[in-house]
Image (tube, rainbow, N blue to C red; front, side, top):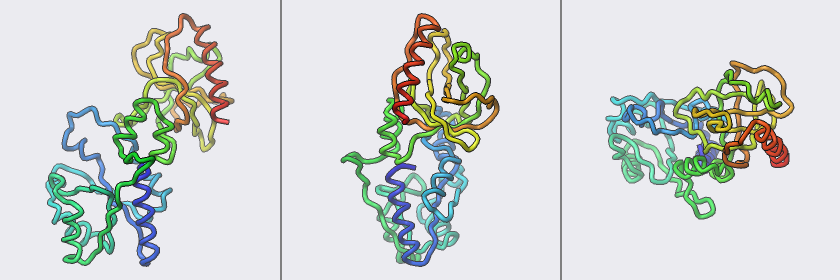
Length: 283
């Protein structure tokens, strides 16, 4: 879900109101690449399915259809897809698609095909032109690159919301607690979810239906001699035990890259600086 998708949904909702219809979005799960290329472990998704559902509901979509994506379904021709699903199952009156959209077997279906099918099957089709943001075309690739470079501010402008990680709080080595910086160690349940660039971030943390300020470190904790990536969030003014609970973390600012310190006292001194900067950024 990014800025361009919101433009499509906005137009869809306008049409639904003007024509006395209801808005519906058709999407697929799992992601087609997960089915067609199961050995490709490089897939990094911006939104999990739960996040997508929540964002679409918030955007005002009245109906969401999640069609199972299988290898058999991937062989559906563009004609069969339009006739059997778009027309016969969804009873589509007007179809709104994004710029340069392709569908059907081998991505053979195009906007031109839809314009040919429309009068035959009694629906109208409208294409939303390429959406530009500061003269840059919005795309999932640009958003991924921004996040992988730690540019969470740029990702926010593309998405129109703060990028989020959600997961379960698991037990860590509790070194942070020993220097008065206890952290919630986040285990991200969806292995395809994109993890932003390692470093320290100012974040908003959603815990038990309440929002808190905090700072997050993504990295390997080189000061402690670790080599396994961890995601740790220090929640300001919070002292509850929340092991095994679900929390959500929204990225507001990237503050610095992860660095190695000579000892825990130096690390603590830097964390105190980070906390002050984070509080000012989040104020």
